[in-house]
Amino acid sequence: MSARRALVLGGAGFLGSHLCERLLSEGWEVTALDDFSTGSPTNVACLRALPGFKLERRDVTSPLQVKGPFSWVFNLASPASPVHYQADPVKTTLTNVLGTLHALELAVKYRARLLQASTSEVYGDPEVHPQPEAYWGHVNPIGLRSCYDEGKRCAESLAMDFVRTQGVDLRLVRIFNTYGPRMAVDDGRVVSNFIVQALRGDDLTVYGEGSQTRSFCYVDDLIEGFLRFMRQERELGPINLGNPLEFTVLELARLVSEITGSRSRIVRLPLPADDPKLRRPDVSKARALLGFEPRVSLREGLTRTIEALATTLARDGSGVHVIPGGRRPEHAPVARGAS
Ligand code: NAD
Ligand code: UDP
Image (cartoon, rainbow, N blue to C red; front, side, top):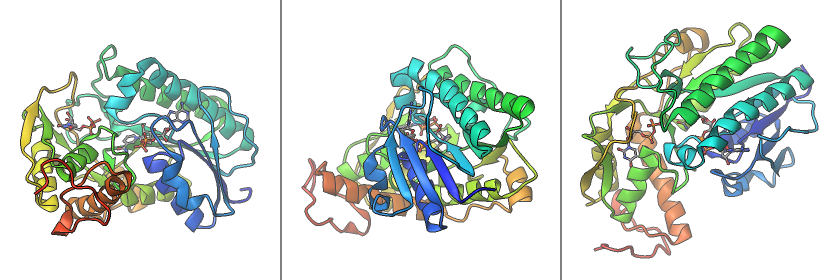
């Protein structure tokens, strides 16, 4: 293997920024490429002074000329929140298909190991629960979510064909709902939505009855899984990574309310089309192969995320009136409804 140099596509995003930070802390040189469509240079601001870190603005749908070599490439470039991936669905498909093609071409060029970030969405609205890797899924190929679901499925197919035809050293990960600090305030996914709403004193918007389930993984646990998977030689995947504890969306709303001490109401809005009713990873494979075991409880992970989002809201002046422990961050403006 050549020098410890890693390329992270989507490196200024939520997961990408945590991954860059972890790699740098382990002595890697890291080049991050990002078009800043849903990520931001702010996410990696604390890394930019480090000599081993480079950040460049690039769109992965265009062929990527990047000066290597790299031992590891991580392809994380894609919007991940339903709100964002449905805003420009054609671009979402292209990002996943062309972006993955370009990542694979770089892996061939530099003989690099490639981690491809796939998703639990490849299982669609699953009829098997929990979802093992062997399940082929239940996806609507023409629905509002299909730009992402089918884009990621096509990316998996492309990656496997590069393994078979070009011998790419793939590590294919299916990520289940992961949350944590540096999620964007306007990300639109459920964890950050509820936290931002609770901190601002706005209504918590539960879609449908709130009986649909998800399994929420704290970001540090996921990144640990990425690195364990990259370091092992035997298995190319796909492998599920996530936290196997399952919660209803209503339970999540109540927990966020409790931890923030918010007086926000929980309101019901219509359930979006094709919203998966149940989701929980079967992580037996990751446990057996990697010793993968999420360590951060939902309560602890939410508490850390709430602290981080409260700081961001206070800094941006976008309104916080409830924060954990009842402390008001310095300089935080008093938001509407604040007592
Ligand atoms: P994110 O939106 O914070 O990060 C995605 C990053 O990719 C952003 O920085 C964005 O600007 C960048 N990007 C998007 N399109 C691009 C393009 N055309 N060219 C270059 N950069 C582009 O979301 P995230 O949660 O950090 O997700 C990262 C990856 O993990 C995505 O591939 C996503 O599909 C996958 N994933 C995440 C989760 C999760 O729960 N967080 C679950 C399943 C899969
Ligand atoms: N959801 C919700 N309120 C919100 C945002 C999301 O009730 O403000 C629900 C959404 O309908 C889904 C679950 O929370 O059932 C998870 O949604 P998210 O957008 O986080 O990601 P998904 O797992 O659907 O890709």
